[in-house]
Length: 285
Image (spheres, rainbow, N blue to C red):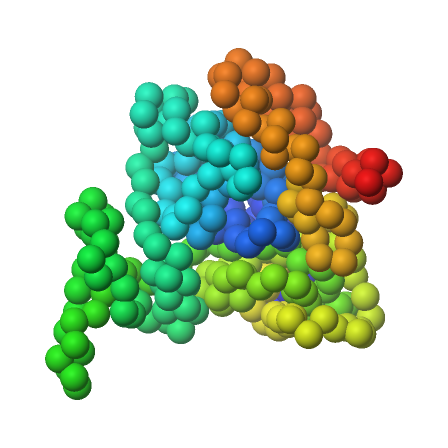
């Protein structure tokens, strides 16, 4: 059952060195505040999973926290490369990074299989694709009923999943509105789940048509962190900080500049800085 607690405590209790962890979000509701707290706590030897790694995984890789990354797209959306990820893969800085790349369809099915407690996912895919030639975890299975040859990948079952959402009620149920990625499956597949939210309300009124409610029994911790998705957006609360994504490309290009930026903007801060950044973003809009 979900309990309400400060983000610092939730990360300390739920994320351990060596864990398999998902920080999921799709286009918006990306859990930057939770990832920054994990960086401040110096977690090591992590396996990061996410369909669309962007700035937040670039930062975690650049800080030497990550042993392996499992994903289906990696980039600074609308801008270009993840330069810290590339440096780790090509030059082992600050340490070597193992990568396991899949298609979006494979990752979505792997999360769903994990949520169902299954050992692998099977689906139609990868036919004619070369990705399976460099990924040993893409295999084939023959349907026992039709004889059709299908793709198979291991299910995704994180030790802990972190997501950001708009609201929690006082029971600890979670409301996710707007674009829904695989947050539901990522939470249900995980042993533990930490959710940062914009606010706590009595009831979920005027719910958006495209919404998802996660029950409190699927959530370990709820942390109130206004602005916790910045620089991504939170539908109904604040817009995407496009300038931050553009600036990141310059910051991440140089190792020294990256290190200085992380100290000033992550290591020397706490989660309260996110609300300040969002208020500034609203003022500039």
